[in-house]
Image (cartoon, rainbow, N blue to C red; front, side, top):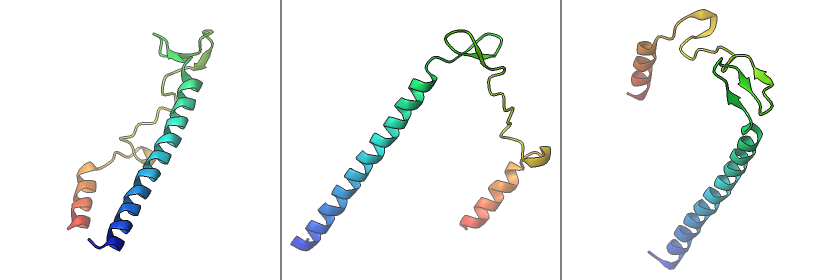
Length: 91
């Protein structure tokens, strides 16, 4: 490598390290905030979500009842068709 190529290579590697460190610290900060906000919540045996005082926060864990295997209008997701489309797209 020429000195210029070495410098550019080193600068690019350094930029990647700094970018990774910044992203890691930001995501770590968000994770700590989320954990602190939710640390007093727990799921009771009747599947209610409660706080440390026993007050009900959510009547059923996962109360939104969202089923990821269902598409809009209650139609099932055709996994085989999706896989075929992805394979066609990559080919």
